[in-house]
Image (cartoon, rainbow, N blue to C red; front, side):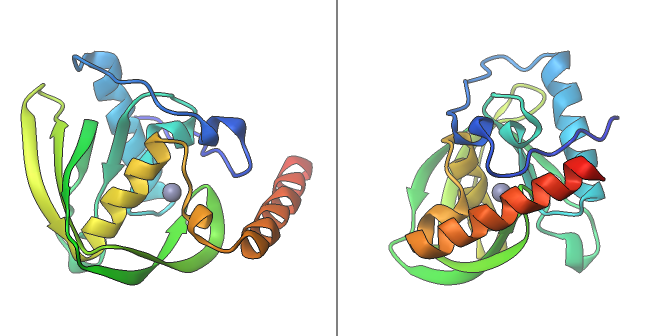
Amino acid sequence: MTIRPILIHPDPRLRKEAEPVGTVDDEIRKLGADMLETMYDAPGIGLAAVQVGVMRRVFVMDCSAKEGTPDPLVMVDPQILWLSEEEAPSEEGCLSIPEIYADVTRPVEVTLRWTDLENAVREHRFDARAATCVQHEMDHLAGKLFIDYLSPVKRTMITSKMKKLKKEMARA
Ligand code: ZN
């Protein structure tokens, strides 16, 4: 497994729509394994393929992190089937926007259908932190970031902070 570099906002690749995978092959299995390794190393609870510069509809997540037993999930060609009417704010962060956290209001439950690494179609209803994570990662596949839910002023502020950070990282 390889830890892949994570793109930092602003980057045009984070604003593009990802392409469907179709049938899972060894290349996608390797991508999934690398993405999990990269996510755990960061550390984070979710990572979309576009964040490592691969424009495919794949994301990984593990929302068990603080409860002990790891629960790694690789979602290929995920689709939201249902969102609850009830919404609530919860704090989000993003590995492509390091050290920035803000409340985003989203549906509290979501039903997702996806293809797993054995090409089986799976469905599950997620709640709590996992529901937030699923929706955040689904946004990535559509070129959307959690800061898009914030005010334009706040978004501009965060973006200039990230530009500065990228300059510092390039110099280091
Ligand atoms: Zn993110």
